[in-house]
Length: 293
Image (cartoon, rainbow, N blue to C red; front, side, top):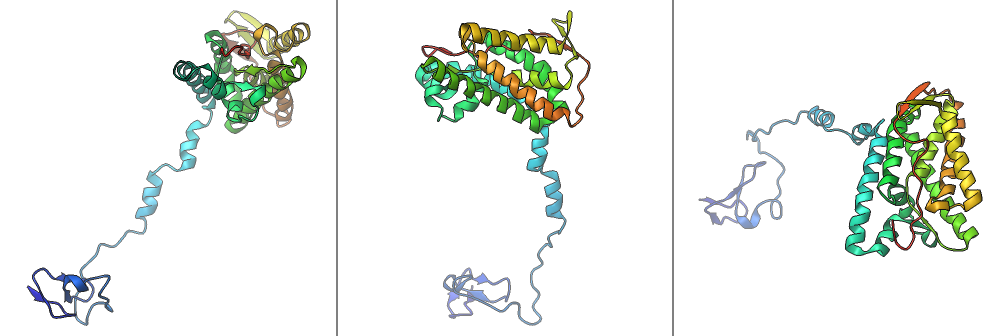
């Protein structure tokens, strides 16, 4: 029991100011009703632990920075893209089963009638038409992606992959609408993978690639055959011949060839020998029809 210094009221559980040592009732306690100039002369103030000025800095060192977390992606974007491809592939069918093919197309298919659906510029790169479509693209990306990423850096590899895929897709649906006079859609990482092949071919056209671990061929023959086949099919059967986005292949390869010329001037080197357990070119970017992926 004590009397309030401010009003003299007897208080069973008074509030004691840690600064001046005076006691106050509930009505005059800090901070609303009481202020003081600090401890009175001769009064000992309670000890408070001093903050170590280096403590915060030490904690900062122990907590990974944003840059540090992003460093994990260095030389690993190939596998991030591969993971996104398969996650998107599964998601396509889940969305289709739950919400229907129309919603699935609006999310995953780059369509000439929906160019303003900007998210499809990206999602269409990772979406695929069927298992073999994604499997072939995955094989080529798995073998050529890390090699390219280590040579040109993760940032430029990311730009090449996404930029090549977007340009290839937009070219395909844009020209389809102009030439065929009918809307068309496209999915697949073929344009992005073709860009990678084009770049490596410029950096080292004579690099030996072992197809199926058996047949040794210089890379320029593989890339040349791939481009030649896509061009021939485009001229004879149309840019979407066989349900395959032939123009997307060509445009992706062109992006890679042009970017490869720029990178080669910087003296980037590519090994002379490489083993590829896959086909001579990436799987076709398929044009979905009637709501099918």
